[in-house]
Amino acid sequence: MAERQIEKDVSDLAKELDEKIDKHIDSLPRKPYKGGLDPDNWREEIEKIPIFMTKPPTEEDIAASPDLQALQALKFAEDDTPEELASSHKDDGNAHFKRKLYKRAIMAYTEGLQQKCDNVDLNTVLYTNRAAANFHLGNHRSSLNDATEAIQLKPSHVKALLRAAQCCLKLQEYTQCIQWCDKGLQIDSNDKKFLDVRAQAVKEKKTLEKDRRKKKASEKKELARLEKIMMAIKERNIRFAALPTEDGDNVDEEGPTSEEKLYEARIMAALATNHVSGASVELDEEGALSWPVRFLYPEYSQSDLIEAFHENSRFLDHFEIMFGVDESVPWDEDKVYTLENLQVYFEDIAKRQLVRVNPKMTVKKVLQNERYQVVGNTPTFLILSKGSPFCDDYLKRYGR
Image: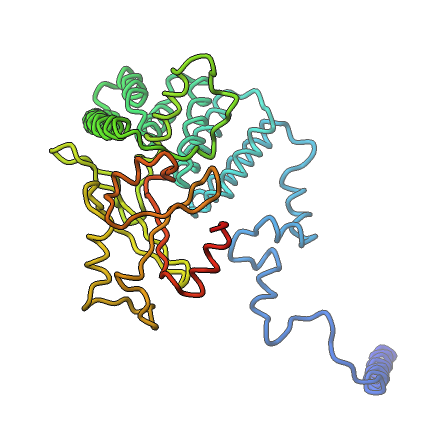
């Protein structure tokens, strides 16, 4: 009986305590629960808890999570040997590599190599694997460097030899590629991968050499063409403006050789600079030059480009086509740019003066004027309408 009474008393006391606790809790002020998962973003928040993560954490995730840092410290314990740490980093790199996370794989393999362990086989694998990750990222030079390091550690490592050959193929270093393949084939003369890479290297090398020969022949032909044009320009004694890179101190005043070379350099630089339209100085079969010539109309900030102005053509010949009786330009609203009003000038660069040109002259005659200097490869002339207020003001700027 006594035992039953004790059990009853305990039960009553527990009930009484429960009621008091419930009463106390009910008396507490209502506050929102803090520290739990946000009902609206619980999926994102639970992903941050290490045990529930579905993706490998990034370096930023680890830096922001004390839990991840603690787990990482457990994995890479301070009392682990360099070889154990290097092996752990290698495993991490392999896991990242399988997920095609090549940058993370490279970081892991690098961490492994930085342990400087004495295990040659392990270091060879770390270099070879990092070479593979770099290769997949297109870092072929870095991949080749890693493969070479692996081969130095273990010359018979087939994977490293093959990776080195593949990198050289991508880098168009075909001779070296063939050499790596030959080393691999010394280990296994029937290895299909080495045979395929070698065959591809031989094929691409032949194509590259053929293309280089073609390019060299084309460049030689083009140089001969430009030299012919240069000689024609020299025969006409046409002057060119100084190059921006010229230094007067480099000219030897005691002999004409340097002056001649400088003159030729100016011509060749001009000939190598084609106009944006593709127009350039040309020499026809009869030995006559054609120039790309620009007309500037400063009054209206307009311009025209005559792509092939034959040296024996007159300015008037082109004006008759451009400004004839039945022709007009849309920007000339006042119709003042007519044949009888057109005036042609060029700038004397040395004296900063305008020189009047007779429209009945040929461009060859004007270019041979001792005061004219060609800038670039495009002779340029100013076109004004005589008698207009703008023309008078513009000429006054040059003291005319």
